[in-house]
Length: 72
Image (cartoon, rainbow, N blue to C red; front, side, top):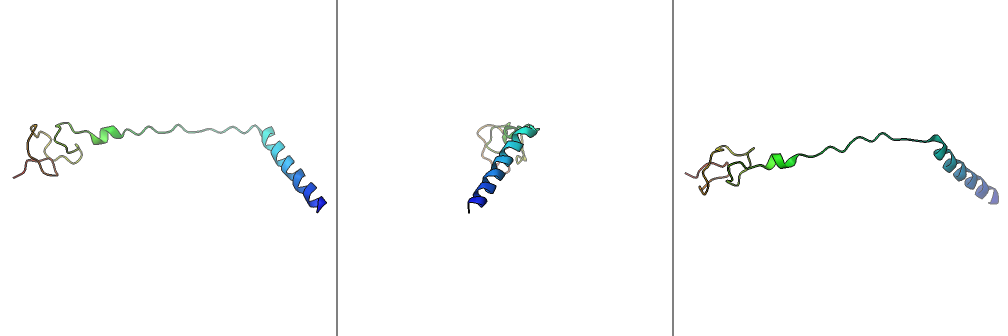
C-alpha cells in the first residue's frame, strides 16, 4: 500500500511540474458582439417590429393588427 501511495504521489508531482514547463498559451477568439437591438426596431412606433411590419408607414395612434396594418 505504501508503494502505491508513493507511485501515485510521484505521478501527480510529475504531471503538475510538466504543465508549467510547457508554457502553454491559448489564442482566444474575441466574443462576438450581438447587435440585437437592430432586430427589434420599430420605426413607425406602432408596436410591431420592422421585420414583421407589413405597413411601415402606420400613423401614430392608428388601430393596427399583428402585421402592423390598420384594422379593417
